[in-house]
Length: 387
Image 1: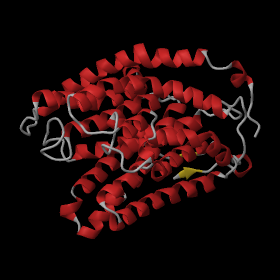
Image 2: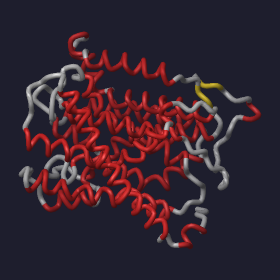
Image 3: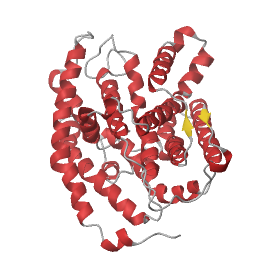
Image 4: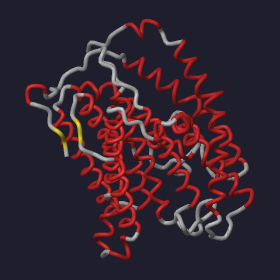
């Protein structure tokens, strides 16, 4: 439920002032690690008792919902870029900063992937697919080999690269729209996401359906929801949301979703599966909005703590490295029998990846970002885009 502002002070569409900088919100950094950890847990436990690195019956099948951590990243990306946007920023300056933030760690993380997956692991690929993964355009093309070439988890970066390409133009249009119009467009996009999934499952092969749903255009609604929410909050709108209540609702939804096949008929169970990504986007944006509002009023929770902020800073490297470590362990020691003791193995591997992530952030990611920042053409920083 929204808390409407008085009519005379209700924000109107239009450009934000160049000096109108949104405050930093540390909880957004902390929750990035939770999303990366959810993806890690999903990959570690697998899609079945015969998948992943080690299957833990206590976590499965709920751990499979961790795959939607990538959808959370898409929502959060749209929110963060819009939350921190300064009107007049040149598109080329935005692209330069994004490249300095994303590419160095991505390229370095791909080096061990070549050995673990392709030289030692024998995963088939081809030159076009691998080069496409280096330039982060692999999800833009069907038929790449394998389905997720290069560093497999970098398919989400390919989607993000498409979002980055569009953002300088999308934000100009969004700033000119009323908040309610943006909300309607965002909601319509999520409905379209569900309908596209429905159509692809009915009319396309499973392989083609999954490619369509990984394509950046199909994931735009998640990014758009994040943008719309950030603009609403920056314009002064507030929502009556409680993070604990949202988490309880999410837990209830997870139970219903994971037992849908036994609790409901096949048609309803299928539609629940097809609406998973849009529903995950709704939970994500509501949780982001709740945490931001809570922090802006001075209530700093555990997500704002120093350890969580640090883990959030390392989360990008954690995400890039975790599946390579998982595959290395699997190929070296094999897959054990399903047992809840796998939870201890999961925690040990997670700590190992955290340590590697700290090293990646400290010696690769952050120095590269600072290097790019120092070499930003001065005229870009002082010019204002008035188009």
